[in-house]
Amino acid sequence: MKTFFTSFTQIGLVAVNTYCITQLNYVAIFIVSALISLLWCYNVTRISVSTINQKLTYSLGAGCGAVVGLLIVKTLF
Image (tube, rainbow, N blue to C red):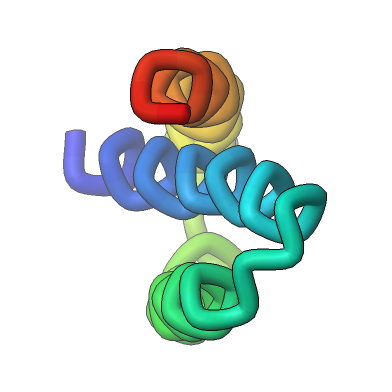
């Protein structure tokens, strides 16, 4: 579950960041990009040496995170 929620959060932030970029919200872009990078640094080592099931869990979390990130953007903005 930890792998799922980590990728879920990371890709959800990418969806939010994409919206911030289109709105030229520089402060939000900076904050969200920093959070994405922080999560990515944590994930890259762990996922690169994981099993296929962990990789699939990570990918599923990423897909769900993208959809939820879009829903958050649509709801808040």
